[in-house]
Length: 482
Image (tube, rainbow, N blue to C red):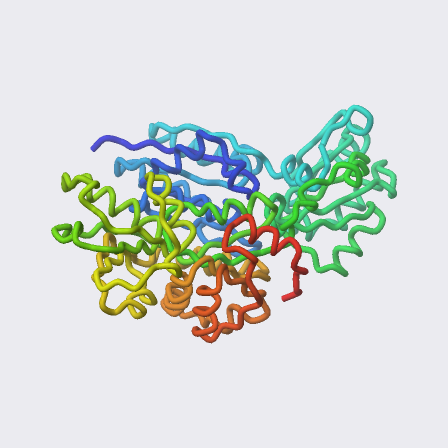
């Protein structure tokens, strides 16, 4: 059997848009991905549907898979002929143990590539409005581990060199050792008034900061119960933050959104929310199987109603594959959502919303929508594909819920409501418990009616069911503490 290949990939600091093009290409072609806790799980959605996902995350004092076992797994999967990605938060060469993993692969003569990533010690400060170097404040920069392999975990460092020779210092994962760090920097020459900032979950919409000095930051951290994952930045360059902070000024910064998902593809709505500073978790994750369809009666319908953008694409793909001349279809086209209407317009068809559809006995519904089936019980139904809950992503979803502090729920369409509730049941999660305290936003009157029918209290809806209107609506809506 031919030996596979391993790609040791830096996932970047959190914001999935910060991964390199080469890193994304490796994910899209992977057959196996071994991923860490600090690699954003949303990146795994770009992997092929049949890719094997293996969690290698590490928490303080609790290892899921130890490093030696990870090395063995990389070798084992590669020897099976697989294309393997080792996905690591930040940059694999900065406290990422890439040297150990590469050495294990080299020992077994397994080909590999190392794909750099943006390290959090630079990215998190920039998202907090702080460049780590500046001609007037900082001409040197160091990244330092804030713990070591000793029993006490206290790093043995050249404290005098750091204190006197480096202008900006980024300590990684060092909250528990913060008093030790501050004490040593002061003892070896750093003024106690030197600015310090902690940046938690840097580059995520949930990013938080806590600022102080070497003299008082440890006490502030205890009071605020600040924890890892955090970057500790020390240096006078922090004073620039007041002038050039940008990420925290985005209109949706602080919004942690759970977005109900109806398709297996990428979401333009999620992208629009993330672009404006929100943290977005999409659920459920679907996988799709195409189904055979009967098109013999397609020219006889007066109205054709499409339930989703996917149903539009799948219908017209089937029309072409069956060699049917589109001009033989005389029906008026309708969409159950704005996205469906836009998908039809991209193909050159003017379509109206289902709300304005005239009653017709000769109606075809393309797609699988339980509410529409009940509303138009005499219509013919054409299901172009079968969507199934992707069971492999359920543990990822639960872990994302644990690490987030969600304050907003968005239902983009009426179809999303029942799918969301049913998928939660499959995860043994209760909808009422999960959404308790969240601001539940419905996009459109039909969606709000479906939300209320499901027993979920709706907080409101934007003036128009578009992503632009939703962004404006959320930006003007005060965030309630959960």
